Image 1 (cartoon, helix red, strand yellow):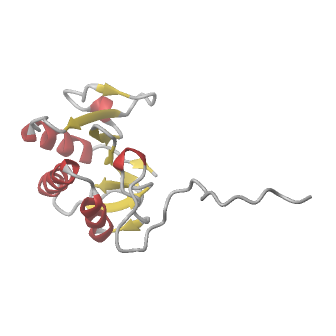
Image 2 (cartoon, one colour):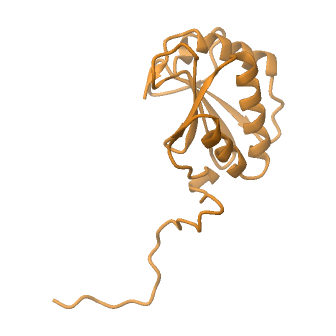
Image 3 (cartoon, helix red, strand yellow):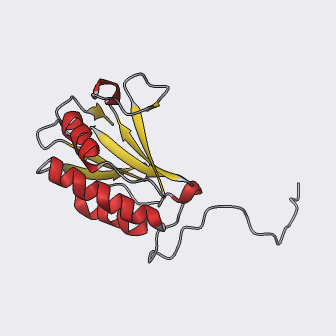
Length: 155
């Protein structure tokens, strides 16, 4: 059977030329999986617009709150692990969406006070940061310190 020939381009995500990461839906950067600070910095560099300063602020606060924090990028999101946690056990991640940056605390239901956004997973809580939000750094650092002391989520 002979197929139809079309001159229309296929609707697929562009891979880019390697110089600039592709932004997925919601503006989340497509970053290759990797461990360490370098892939996280590549993710932060690729975050669009106002979200980049939020990402850099979050990364700096996490580093300050948890000396020796381990980092990785998986599933196009930076992940953070306590220095003494087993490999691939993470306490926090964040991800870009159209109107906000979503911070995921994998054991967030146990944080006091718990972040307000719930999940279909009972242990998980989210914290959303919108463009004009003022980040309560003291509260965020407190959550990060608490979360880093809990068993991480294996991923």
